[in-house]
Length: 317
Image 1 (cartoon, rainbow, N blue to C red):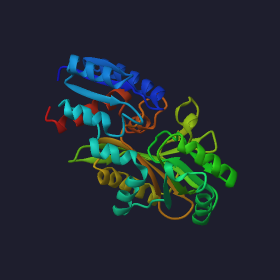
Image 2: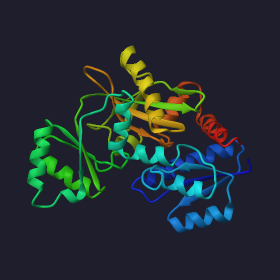
Image 3: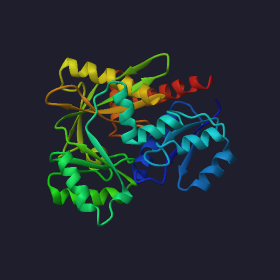
């Protein structure tokens, strides 16, 4: 392999995080001896021109959110016959659509939260009261409101009453065309990094997330000191084993490749509840996937090289 392009930045609401992930990946791969072509993605046409002009042998996608994790960039690379790190078009699109992904998880025997989905067009003025009444008859407060196809808790609200429910719905419809309502499950938030190929997929140690805010919001995810990552998570052995087993099962259920990160809530009683699968986990200085890798003796640069090597095998490089 002669060179690797790192596509980072993007045009989603998670651009700033992607810039940080991308810069970390570029530096790490350069330190490992790779010839790296940085490609800061700012618009579709310029990215396409750059890919056609520079003809990279391989691509590391360091994007987050729409036009990065949702299968569109993956589709472009496949049309151009350029191999890349990570999950393919279908798995990426499925993981980004939280409601559809949950159907696959449930079919695989993984516990999911009760949900209801509304389309943005449903929120006409004459239907709003009807929808709110329907939500209140389906869920107890608090209730979770979030865009169905966003990441990093963008547009998320945990509503404790009708007023905050209305505010949360108004926020969510500014972010997406589909709105996901879910039951709120109190518990310990954990995440499980998954790494490997079809031959061998492993779950890395479970990380417990302790946010400084009331829940694991955007600031808690990305601001230095925004959350504490505890490895191994302070949960019992049974919950640990189930979370690791289900993380691999969720990865496989969506058809993910190379690596992913699977988020769960450990409730006060019962099995873990899956939240989502991240097909392009963050690679910033505060990110969870690098923390999990370090806990098994894989420093940041070695981890990225291993991810690239696993992905290369898919293309017989």
